Length: 98
Ligand SMILES: [Zn+2]
Ligand SMILES: [Zn+2]
Image (cartoon, rainbow, N blue to C red; front, side):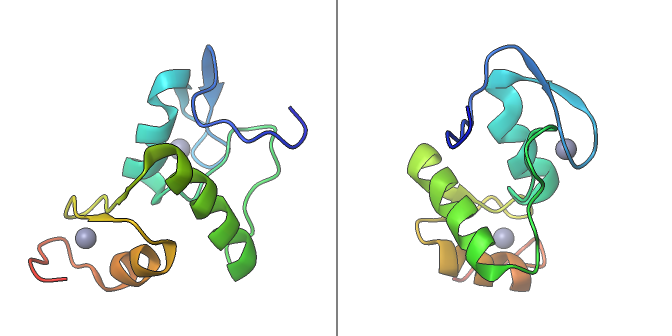
């Protein structure tokens, strides 16, 4: 799986960030809730969080898979990567407006 990014791996996987083991089908939920999607499976090179291009690419792949990016604080969804990043940066957990 060199260049293939999977968000529903089979079997259990270990999170490269918090080292927790999660079921493959729970993986996407795990990174959404715990890491604002900013995590990779252990064994895959970790994300470089100050590399904006890399983050964009990563989130774009996820968005293609989940359709909408969900804020883990308030549950709001964003279709665009840029607006999602802007939202999670400013979200205080009880935002009602966009
Ligand atoms: Zn984790
Ligand atoms: Zn939010």
